[in-house]
Length: 491
Ligand SMILES: Nc1ncnc2c1ncn2[C@@H]1O[C@H](COP(=O)(O)OP(=O)(O)O)[C@@H](O)[C@H]1O
Ligand SMILES: O=P(O)(O)OC[C@H](O)CO
Image (tube, rainbow, N blue to C red):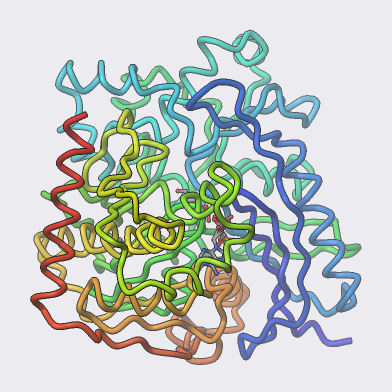
């Protein structure tokens, strides 16, 4: 049997998937398992890292069994970012739950650091802002509040890392404690310029360097695993939004993608020099290959598909996510309803962890179809806020490449094009995140010379949505949204 497939592990927020790709970018086999969400207090979100490992192992073995393990040439890993795992190097087991990127428990710590004037230095060094979203305050909180974490630290047993770091450690049977530069760039601890841990930030957040992984490239001989029987190399690793950027072949400055899953993450390729945002966007590592980083500007919206899930599970006004397409289409407009879905605070460009959502413009004539339509319209307006910030930072988006669970919805894609006034392009492989990780692993294994060669072989657009409303109508929507945002922020 020839080793002709790349196996990707995508450890996401709500589920874990393994997908085998051939070198033409087609999906040959896949497996998926849902991940349990733990909400111990309002605003807290935790995962069981042991469960993440078991689901990952099971999905990888499932796909390897489907295709035949000898066909797996190499493995690529991609993951939910910022989420922090705490484990014991001697037992190989987690010492506590992982604190998830959505968790807001360190909002007060971030506000205090802001009040003390630390944000300009943090932003200049890391490209990030002081928000509980990022990892550093989660690490300190765990050390200060979870005795098992503090004890493991005191005994020299504690290791920490983002989800890919944990999984590579498990896959390599505890021989590799590494993190790739994209994931490291989300911790608030890494210098953007040379991709190293910053001593000043380690001191500011009270994180000991000894518990952190070594920072690596995103492609190359990162580790190896005996899980599939032989000695399978792991040659690709990147955070899921960076992987999606690669999967969309956003390889040149100014090319922009947005992924609509639980949250929405828009990344614009920014080239070989770390960009500086003056409009509250993030500057982040897009990938690092051969020791050379490429950078991106990013806007993170915490509530995208999660708003549709809330319509289904919280309000109970829809039975399934896919129902939203026909319901939005069934009314001529939202009937004046505007929904600002700040269900988990607000991310870019507002960064208000304490913000709450608002549903305005209701009347006796409002139906569930209007509310559903307003929910999907909010995706267009939230994206337009990011695209405006990007343009103000000097990166006008000529078109937008989209992926994620929500873009199966054609009405949503058309509404995005209308709201933004640019062409929206949907790829052939909607599993763009996994595809990007496969491209990295292919480059890392020497199957492709570089990402451009991998993109030429594996990535292709499918359908485009062109703007179909006039600029005055677009502006009227923007004005209505701006008014609702002001009301939301004023609360
Ligand atoms: N047809 C649809 N229309 C609108 N939203 C959808 C549709 N299908 C799925 N979604 C939403 O997309 C999200 C799932 O996307 P996915 O990319 O799998 O998320 P994640 O990777 O964050 O777990 C869910 O929040 C779901 O409500
Ligand atoms: O797991 P996803 O797809 O919701 O992505 C989560 C992001 O990486 C958080 O920054």
